Length: 229
Image 1: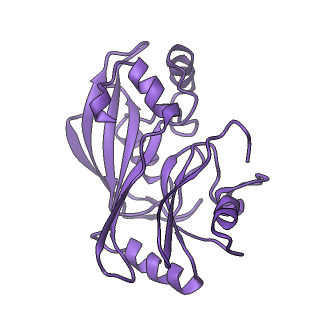
Image 2 (image 1 turned 90 degrees about the horizontal axis):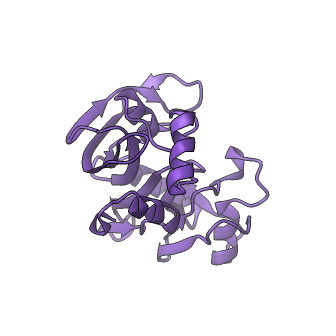
């Protein structure tokens, strides 16, 4: 792993499931990148298994919760669980401008690159608006009920509140200004928690990934109340 990246952390594990807190900057799977080291490699090393089975995905720049099954059969079961309407994935995102107090974004996006657009639903609420320079920013809690390609990133851009540090859907000049003033050198998107029905025990399981330092410290410098993290 590149030495400047934090080490991933195991958030939960049992005989069927392994949940990892991924740092920003680390790709999950070599199919999505040409990196020498990806999260799948780390999970293999940490678990001692020959193969790791990621279920769901996070972009390289996004930190937080990533699920792994221990077997191919477990991965199939977990995929079914992830598709259930009672599986809830919650994210923190720092966005441009003063976002609405809350809202629902119902806007189709592709499942895969260059794919057809399909239904996608995100709800959000604004936790805090910060009087930052060169313009105000807002910390948003977003919950997704579908798993589409760059769903939160696309949806927040769709309502004119793109995520800070997002090189694809944001503003390069604003991203650079925020990095220079506050030291935010990553995309400000963190997969904070997931709630799901465990595929084996059938019990409700909630797993939370702490907000990482490379996001926490710039937010505190911007004046964010610590209790929101």
